[in-house]
Image 1 (cartoon, one colour):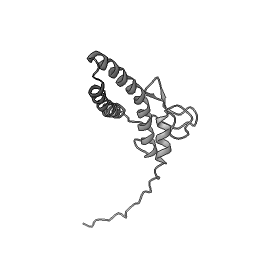
Image 2 (cartoon, one colour; image 1 turned 180 degrees about the vertical axis):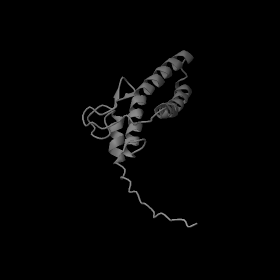
Image 3 (cartoon, rainbow, N blue to C red; image 1 turned 60 degrees about the horizontal axis):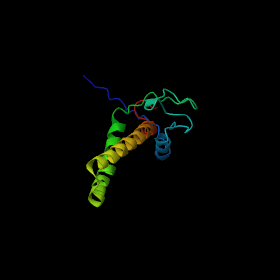
Image 4 (cartoon, rainbow, N blue to C red; image 1 turned 90 degrees about the vertical axis):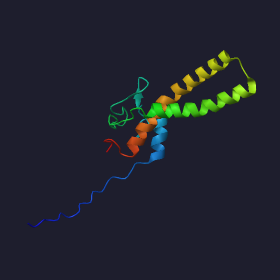
Length: 132
């Protein structure tokens, strides 16, 4: 039996798109392609297509990534600040809790849609999950 050897087929992949502009557009919750259309609607839902340029955005797979990054950032920003405020000012426990609960909630609500937009933009720039 003789085996036939297939010649190597080289598939040229398209180069990655510029990452930094895409991430900045995603952070602003704008289309990573044109920067004009909104990526998100109703706080965290991703549009299927950009209303301005028609770029397909339904391929995104952000899943729990924005939530994990939000928790990571809020925790790393607020925990040292909590310790610092407690050590320097020694406020009453309920005052400390109230201030930091509102701070953590506000920062989380601010960061979550921006990080989701940035993750969608990252996937778009790297042509991940069908963004071809």
